[in-house]
Length: 183
Ligand SMILES: Cc1cc2nc3c(=O)[nH]c(=O)nc-3n(C[C@H](O)[C@H](O)[C@H](O)COP(=O)(O)O)c2cc1C
Image 1: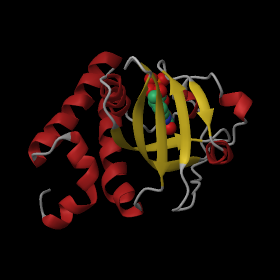
Image 2 (image 1 turned 180 degrees about the horizontal axis):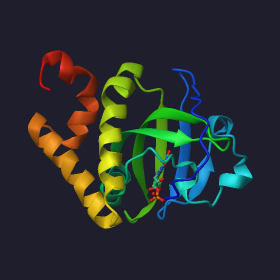
Image 3 (image 1 turned 90 degrees about the vertical axis):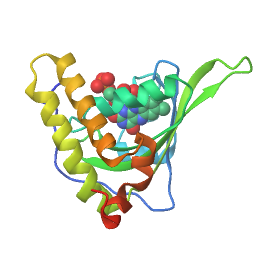
């Protein structure tokens, strides 16, 4: 991932009752993007169709989150994740994504589908941004990308073990854990 990517620091928002949708083929190349996806990201349909989904990748996203995403969906399971995306003009927007595999009649995975909703602001600011910053720092500190990825992945495993939660349980309950004093 290039680190010199242009960012404005400006956040974009969408409505609580809206859903940003995209679909990909099995390799993660975009096969569908709804109007809101295009409107918020600032890309035309032509610019995103058949492109790898990392076209909207934001450099603040830790690589270990996408590794986990791909491992999970490739196994045929669904995953929820908090993601910050980069718009074409360098703005960004946070989403709470639900990514699911699509199968053909034989049961083979033929693609993936992501629905994204407005995330809880408090969760983003108090939990996810600090966590992702720590993970990103661990990844960036290593000159060997593979070791960096292993380190951030281990940090996630340790955090989950500490809390006694699986990743999906963590994502589902992240706003409630501090209040209940699990932290
Ligand atoms: C259905 C689907 C939706 C995805 N949505 C996003 C997204 O909104 N933002 C993003 O950065 N990556 C998304 N990804 C993950 C990308 O494929 C990619 O793994 C990620 O951008 C990291 O890119 P990199 O491996 O080049 O670092 C999605 C993947 C799938 C299969």
